[in-house]
Length: 83
Image 1 (spheres, one colour):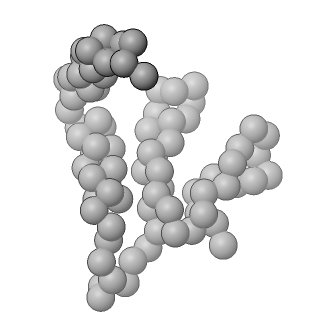
Image 2: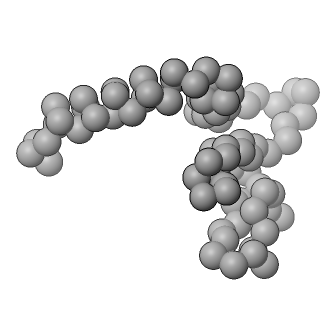
């Protein structure tokens, strides 16, 4: 069983039901968070919680996207040629 994106849609993929993802839509202008449903007694993996936090902050804090992009640019320049 999968959640989120339908395999019937053109150029789509299927997200396994046990995985989470941040997905852009509307040509990269919208953001959707896909996550499995956990029971009250189940532990949500930390990376899923972190991904949810990033998604929420991206939607609620317009300056956060700029911070992320500046961070990425800095770290790409810092690590250029070190592969």
